[in-house]
Length: 132
Image (cartoon, rainbow, N blue to C red; front, side, top):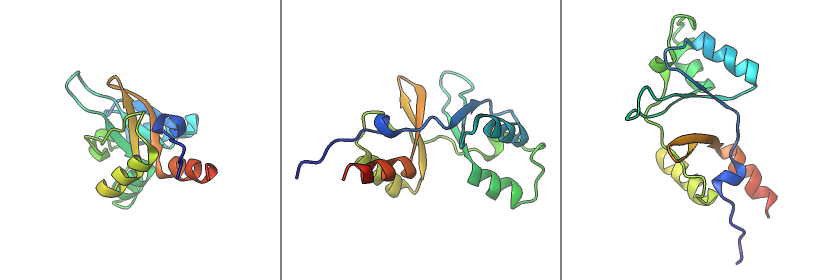
């Protein structure tokens, strides 16, 4: 069976914004709306720090469901950190296995210690189905 290799970099999305963790959830939501993005990557505070990730579902679960004021909660309080990074040259089949193994749905694509994209099941599944 000759399967065409599809790499993470071929299907990753650019629907993310890099923000400082000290920004409020309200500021993060405003940035998401303005940029039509779906996720917030929380920037490193220093060279030896790690990136964080805030998804809309995090805001729903950790702010809305707990009846917290979005303008009084900082992004660092609700982010997932450290995030599991994915290399841009990884085969999407292995990326899907990694997601399943760790119970995640999205991950930043990191190359040379910099975020270059965001990969999710959505991009992988849609692209894989197009190649059949």
